[in-house]
Image (tube, rainbow, N blue to C red; front, top):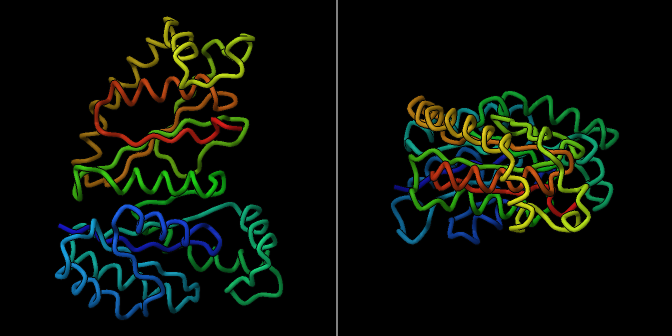
Length: 281
């Protein structure tokens, strides 16, 4: 069974990167197809070659009429394909402004300034964002991190119909990820940053991981979190949730949260993808 994905979102939030990432993992990607043709083309694509992992439509128009048409099209796709989903890409206004100023591209939404264009587009896309099955906040991700996240989220061996679980480690000093479902704070644990020989290392290093995980509080924390998730994950899945994202935060996102996130993935044993957002900051 093919997975059908409609990728949309704010201009400058990373549609081109997501398109390339999906192609890299074997998806059939169609960009800027007229909206009214998407349902028909999806039927043709699904009935075609079995070599593709899924079919993705990249939609970038931001006019009010186009968004209403896109929602209607998505409802039609969902009626045709039980695996059809909307992926919405977003980023904070200041990040989008910086990206447009850096590339000197003209924003597609008609407005006197980039700031006003972003505000107008965001207002028009709000209903579509609310209807999305998955929202990815790309403001704190570079291109490689976004490609990695897409590859892990949409290249799961269990295939369509299985809820995808992702674990993200982060640093509170760099902001809480805006697109996650559950957030856990591990800043109560002793910080390896203050141990001179551990400071230049990360939570992926065995010596840092051992320092973090050997603490009784860390074991208590992991036991409680795993115990909760072991019944929550099946409950979310039975309610039809397609994606569940779990964030683990420490101060800088390099030591404690990384070690805890890796151990959480090992203990959950659900084939979760993992992203260490701030490990190199």
